[in-house]
Length: 379
Ligand SMILES: NC(=O)c1ccc[n+]([C@@H]2O[C@H](COP(=O)([O-])OP(=O)(O)OC[C@H]3O[C@@H](n4cnc5c(N)ncnc54)[C@H](OP(=O)(O)O)[C@@H]3O)[C@@H](O)[C@H]2O)c1
Image: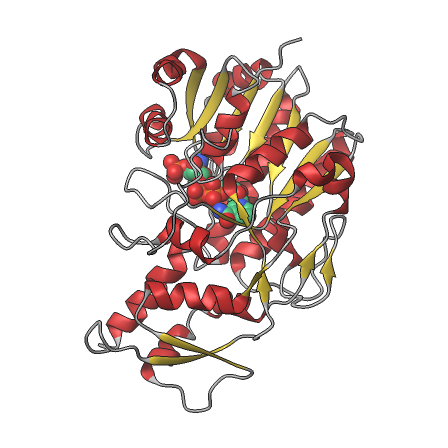
């Protein structure tokens, strides 16, 4: 039986890679695009062109993709009652990857997109006569501000609080998903990726690399305090742990693992998977990367400086982000590994790889021979 798949967030950093993977096994797909956010088919087409897809593949996209304009934040995704029901009845599976990853966003704004958005997608799944399977993209960071120890796939608890409103909104969305599955007796796949990265160089027509937001904040702060010429490297003390580590995973690999997991027989309830790298990146590597991107010298300190400089005070406005430099926890992914074995492991994410995906044009790393992993070279 051919299952018709609908995907939200298909124009996003992860969604484009999910779309690519899903097009590998499905002749056609429905893209639930963000209404009023540009021509989704054009953006998708540009992604495939820029990542070296064969011409025939690109030419076939208009026939293979049906675009429905939606707004996650609105009831019935902003569709009329009839259009909503027709869409619900058409689909056999739904992938929900749309959301706001704005780490600086406030809770009401993030709730509208991430929590109400999940609610509306679940309503769509509940309304469909084919009882579509739900694949919900969450984040490993629902683990919140527990900075040490191990976060397990079945855990979902609020006791340690959250580093920022984004984490809380994704946690609340998972609560909704769990309640929905119980209430309707329906299976849901919850996919929790860590921080997704690529080595594909930045391009104005591609979704922004998730780490670029940190680069922008540091750069803006440096500018705001008028920190001299680019040759100066003001020193910034920020709370962090010298043995801290962060989990960063190639976005292309994450999409591949997610689609493979979706091919497994579901348990019938909520199956949650950590989509993570088996080796964490040491925080000092992330610091070196940031120092390469912005003329700053970053010192990790154990506690907030008592007399912060103007620059340090400004950066302290973004505690929800810099907090990650103090993280030492590990994400357990036993469930993924027991299903997929060693094939779930990914190539290393090192400084060269990260630099390739973030470096401004003309600043490629001397001596780096590797070609970026494009969507097509990794397929
Ligand atoms: N990126 C990461 O490192 C990371 C890590 C862990 C988990 N995740 C999760 O992965 C998912 C995808 O993230 P991403 O990196 O692909 O984010 P992204 O690049 O910002 O893409 C977000 C997608 O959601 C769509 N969208 C946003 N608001 C919408 C609305 N109101 N109605 C309909 N569509 C809307 C966007 O459409 P437009 O572009 O047209 O606005 C875009 O397609 C999210 O659920 C995120 O929480 C991401």
